[in-house]
Image 1 (cartoon, helix red, strand yellow):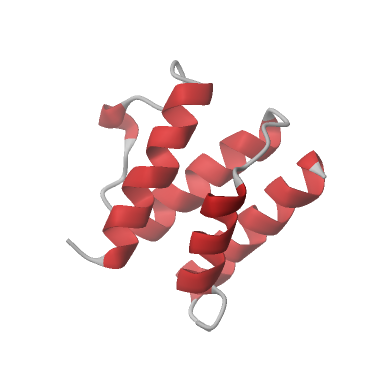
Image 2 (tube, one colour; image 1 turned 60 degrees about the horizontal axis):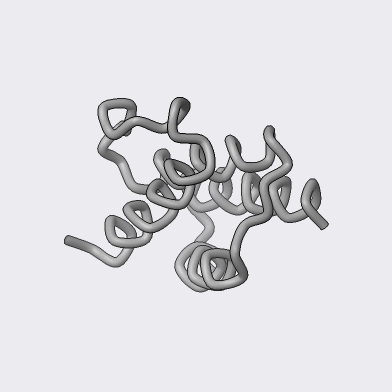
Length: 85
């Protein structure tokens, strides 16, 4: 399991605790960046505050990367943080 996979588990679990009907395990894509972006997007859509620990972990994992997946994750994170700020 990679750091991204572990982070996806944490972010998805957070989404499940806040919106259990929208984030069942069988809805995961199996791709960590996609699952993280989906969970963050769901939080933003429902004005749910993302814990600082998740914000820090996602930022640490994706902020310095310049690939498409990282850009999508960071865009969803920025949207989620902006919505709940």
